[in-house]
Image (tube, rainbow, N blue to C red):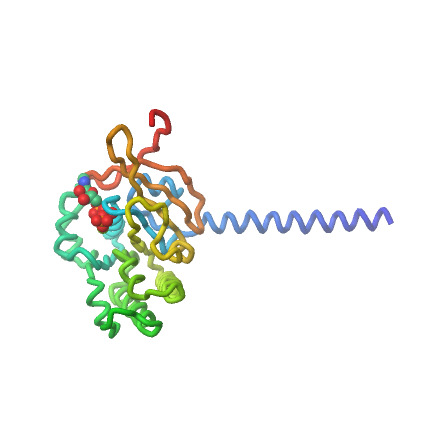
Length: 272
Ligand SMILES: Nc1ncnc2c1ncn2[C@@H]1O[C@H](COP(=O)(O)OP(=O)(O)OP(=O)(O)O)[C@@H](O)[C@H]1O
Ligand SMILES: [Mg+2]
């Protein structure tokens, strides 16, 4: 009887050590996922080596918090590393966006000439997808995903920014359609090995991650940009809220927009 118990215990130990090693293997696998370096050193450090390749990340924040700047830098750094990047814009024109790239120390016009950075207007993509009315139904959403993926395939793009996904969500109008669209898009982009940033705009003064409350749940990662008033100064802040496939800090950092790009420094809690 004793012997039987001891056999059972041995089996149990083996099972628990097997599941423990499976757990470790899974953790290693997760941390071993190939990373896409954003090129923003502070962010890559927070993420312990960048965004897991193929992830779709929501970069969210109120107006003027640096969402577009972060997206442009992500695309530019990728282009420097020979990764084609597509920047889909809904609000600003390609010309304006190109102009805002010029002051960066690391900007090289040849990246545009060589087609390493491509600007696409969301409006054009709507046309390609056959979307004309103000509302996008499920069929239209599927066509829009197809149009985006076709653009990615055509250019073999490895990075994509959509500025903003909020403007698409407004036209999708129902939570189910938004969920379906973002999930479908992120799966299709992951299949192409394309790492994506979806920019989300939230109203000033709110502490939500997205206007519809669905976006943050279905994406792989959430990076929250914000404002913090301190001693009469309005600081920009950045916080990684979640990133599937990566261990990361959830601390709040001060974000500085400079000609060297986004700079991050730990937020000193004292002296508020
Ligand atoms: N390289 C830079 N150096 C200093 N300031 C900058 C730089 N780039 C942008 N800014 C400033 O930061 C502000 C916000 O930048 P950005 O457009 O990236 O924010 P946003 O969150 O996308 O804003 P919006 O909500 O209007 O889309 C700009 O108004 C500009 O004044
Ligand atoms: Mg912007």
